[in-house]
Structures are given as structure tokens and as C-alpha cells.
Length: 215
Image 1 (cartoon, rainbow, N blue to C red):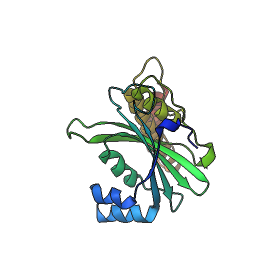
Image 2 (cartoon, helix red, strand yellow):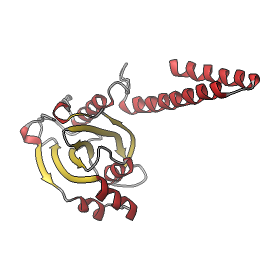
Image 3 (cartoon, rainbow, N blue to C red):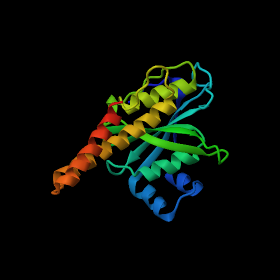
């Protein structure tokens, strides 16, 4: 379980209907809330007041929600609507019986909709024993603390090197994921293709995709 300073503990239960009543959700999404989510706790509030740190340029508070599930699964669209509508950076801790999983997105303020956020590229831990979930608070301001949380949850999927910005690392990770998906599709097509000329063309496309992936 997360071992944050006592000063950050908020531990307030929020009725799940508060979410779907106050957020812009469809009837279908409301039904998903009811079907998938058992309880929601606003577990921690990380801010300049609760931590010995300063606000960042982009991150003013980090809220940690612990959500108990009825099944060991959560629909991404349920999380996205919460993430988009709440004007703070969020960490989701999902719990199902003795197991837990952390979700985070790269989140930035929308340039076209004031007070709204753009949510991009979710990262998750594996399902672990709940007691084994951990995040380490590292950084001199909330921007860096959030970035380090994201790196920890991504588990190696974000390559932070040579001073690269977290936004650029997320973009590179997305491109890498697209290339890996393309490579898998091309390999499957090559294995199933009967025409030699078509096979040769697909092999050329595969080689090009692998070269791009290796850059």
C-alpha cells in the first residue's frame, strides 16, 4: 500500500453517484459506474500545504483516489471521464479483494477548453498484492513529483534521458507502441500470405518498421 506522509492523508469516502451526477456522463456510462465500482475514497491530497514542497508550473495538486471494484476489471472510459472533469492531476489506485493496481495518465490543461484537461496515454502497474503497491515521492515541486510517479507506474515504458521532457517521452512511447502493433500485424500477414510477390512487399514494410523502431 502507499506509504505517504500522514499530512497528506485525506481518507474521505465519496458516494459514487456524486461522480456520475456531477460529471457529463451518458446513461450507459452511469450504468458502468454502478456495475464496476463498489466504493470510492479520496485517499490522499498532495499539495504545497500537505507536503514540504512548492507547486509546479503545470501541477498544483495531486489527488489519489482509491477505488474498490466489484470485479478485477475497470473500463477505461469510466476513468477517462473522471480524469478529464476533475481539474487536478490524479492517481487511481484500484483494489479488488487483496489485489491492487495503479493507473495514471499524462494529463495537461486543455488549450481550447478553459478549466478542462486533456488526458493522454494511460500507464498501469501489474495487478499486485495490495500491500505491495508503492509510489515514492521524489522531486522538489509537484511537477517533478507527478512526473516521477508517472515514470514509476509506466515501468520502463517511458524513456527519460538526455534531459528529455516528459511530454516528449510520452509521444515517443506512443510512436513506439504504434510501430510494435504494426510489426505484429505485418508478421501475421507474412505468415498467412500465399503470393510470393505480396510476401516480398510485406517483408520490405516489416524491415522499414523495425528500422524505425530501432532508432
